[in-house]
Length: 291
Image (cartoon, rainbow, N blue to C red; front, side, top):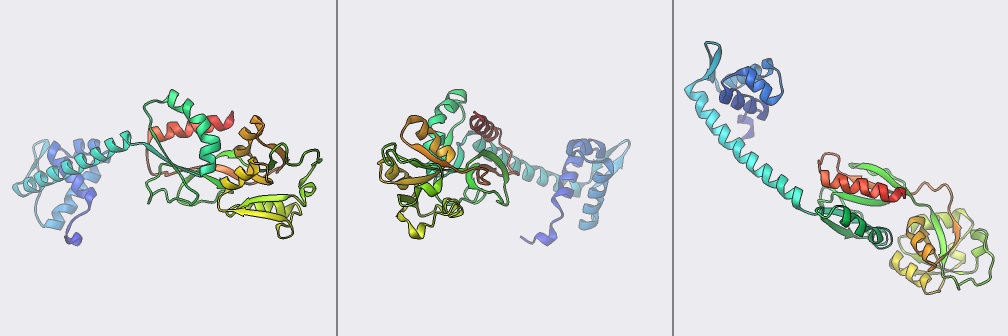
């Protein structure tokens, strides 16, 4: 198809509507544009094809024989586009909301709460995509991404979900009677770190903990480092929202909290996509984070 020979879609839409209504004014109301804009589009098509497509007849307009052939073809074509578009919209309304998040946030924060969402919104299905790598919302067809960091992600609408400073934790019996007032009191212990815990390392370094001089065991995932801490093998550094349920349950004791952290959990969505079900889920997330 040689697209250079095909007029603009706006002009074709204007002409199809004008031919269907036999009125520039009705076409203008149909497409929410001005009467003059419809006239300009039709005249542009007539110049393009060097054919008269519509002509005035009394107070209204009539379509020429050449114009009728084009109008009928456009009506069929726009009808096919409308059917395909509506089919896709129907699919988007019924398919699950795809949510990308880290495995730790899914396990420790979202899953204990998700039952309440199901009770409130039984007709909204969620597809959770827990993974450590970042996803591309458009390429991976993701509706909501929950990311941890300081923000600055491009190409998405970013909304802060909740603050997420770090906390150093250990099993209740790990340090026994040792007094801990700050991170420096933890020097000489065993540190349990995941390979991807860059922000956690920065926090420790800012508080004079040089991991090069410490006893450190590194795990492939953050989850494994937490499980090792749960088993009483050392100290793990965890985002506070992840740690809080375990601290409340007595699985961990909080040793030191990070104050005034710039890191947070954020909600990322695609601003060009309209999805009422997605927006319901986002509002519910924000309400849960505020509790």
